[in-house]
Amino acid sequence: MKRPATLIIFGLAVFAGAMLFGVAFEVSNLEDRLTGLNKEITRDRDAIHVLRAEWSYLNQPERLDGLSQRHLELRPLEGRQFSDIAALPMRPNRVPTPTTDPVSAETAPAIAALVNAEPGGLPSAETPIATALTAKPKLKPAAPRRPARNVRLASQRISPEATTSTAASDKAALDAALRAIFGNTASNREGASR
Image (tube, rainbow, N blue to C red; front, side, top):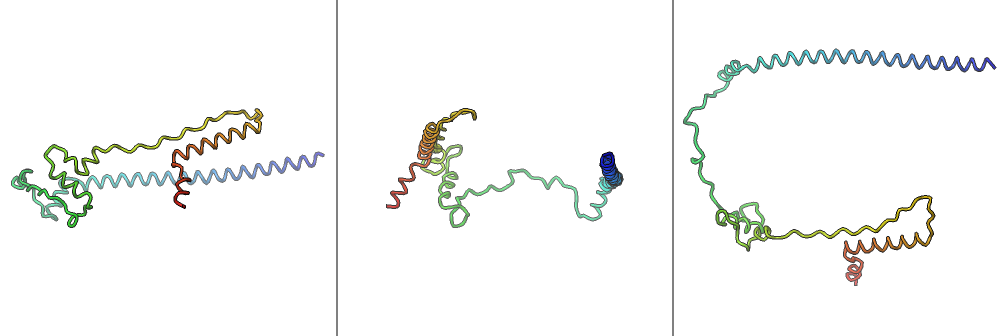
């Protein structure tokens, strides 16, 4: 009786030792990887520091000025090169035509009405833009009312008659809601097929 228990305990001890050895080996591998990553981070920080110092040297204004004078043919701005906005020519007012401009035939009259409208005023009431501005948005159909749901506990017994009557009332309510939304499409299909 002692021998099987001793063997089982010895087997468990060997298994626990093997698992402990595996975990210790994995931890040492992760520590080596962490050390390598920390060395890479330090090396990258040093490289960034050197690159920033080189960038600040390369961007010195005196050095850039000498390079621009040596390699570019740029000169400082002179006062006679400036002008004001009044010196620009006015853009001509013209109405786009469907043959010359990529404007559709139905929007060309609306654009013409806007161009010929009085300053600060709206175009006349006959133009498509004026009708679009005064048009009212279309109303969305009302959402159907949800049928009332009776909450029952799992421990409560339900009679088969009650289940059938509630299912029938739910089906009738659903049919009524679908007819309200889609407008009795079954009668429309029958009329179309005749």
